[in-house]
Length: 124
Image (tube, rainbow, N blue to C red):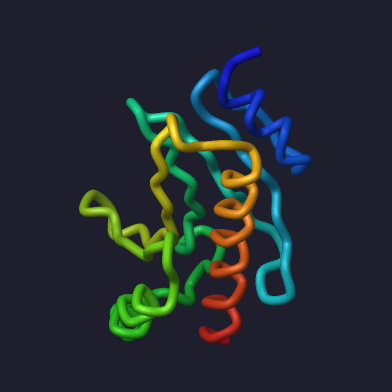
């Protein structure tokens, strides 16, 4: 079993391995019916993220950028960013593989999911 799969198994969360270095965890919340939190192994990091543009179709545009940027001040590990390639807005947390346990990974996955749901509620 690969390291990422072993860590995710220890979280108790449902997940689907896309490949050895990428997994998707399905989520649904009060403000977003269905979205995914993705865990990706990149070098010596695990990147945990969700694509807000995809989860909130038609809700994010230039009028929301200031609000989104200000939200970075409210969360410790999770940050909101934008892709330089296609202006996709995402929530993301990066953690070092060497410091990652299933318990820490669970907390970060849940925080990414919860912040996505909070942001979605604020954008109604």
